[in-house]
Image (cartoon, rainbow, N blue to C red; front, side):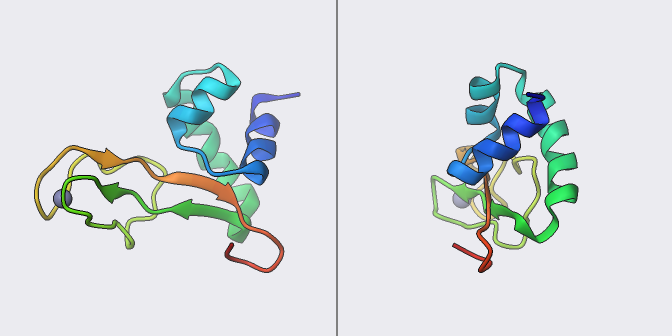
Length: 95
Ligand SMILES: [Zn+2]
């Protein structure tokens, strides 16, 4: 099974950060992000991103649905950011 296929299967099973996925498929986080960029294009609307969130003030990056973590909160400047989590949406859309 290819790494990309493995990632797609994992996305159907739960919600994963890039770090979780890198541990599960044994490649670097950087590599996982590159795979996710391709996977998001091939899965299109089935690719779900749970927005990153600031752990210091609770700010939710709802309008920043990118694969890479923002790194820093625009509101309080904290760098304690909960990374975005990725998942596969079911046939009925959001879950
Ligand atoms: Zn904040």
